[in-house]
Length: 262
Picture (tube, rainbow, N blue to C red):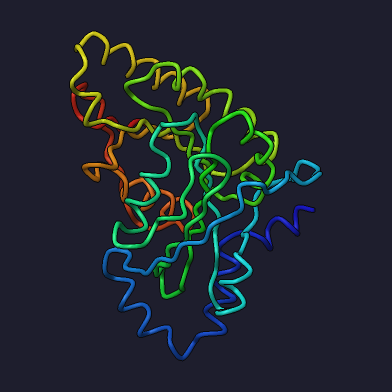
């Protein structure tokens, strides 16, 4: 089993991609020097998708979207799961990262949504397959599908609604039942509204969020999809963690500014 886990690490997939695409590596590497360009596509998952009877996995692995891999077998697909209560801004966060220009008429509040974004990392073509679970009680049935095989778990809460922060630990614990080793990230959304709250309330929420992040051993980000605050930075952080990229993250604990804590 340890050998199997080592074969499933993202760096092993990169090496395979390099071997298959040696003649194109120089061109792709030049393109990778820019800031993660890419294209996106939308794929809706049926809201009535039933939860499979699955045993808890030993750990995450690279999970490819079948339609993407069929079209391009050289594409490496990595799954990222967005978890949290309803109306925390998960779908808006996902759309902001993938691109506002895409058609999103099929997105739904309940059930599951999924979108893909292709980027270039060290000469290899990587697809982030981003899964967004609705957050209602029925969505708990989808936890195995959402969490199994993910390389990162984004636990999301609304900075203006403390109940969603209180529930973040529960989402994290349920996710860990199905995925023990994915990179955890705690994300506070709607920062643009949060800064309008009284300062003492901001202090309380910041301190609680930092305590929860420490309990999860997660990196904490405050973000805003409306103003594109820390959205791209969160996914760059995930890519840097997965592929050991030379990208530094600056800590920010100033109340009134987008918090980053690790």
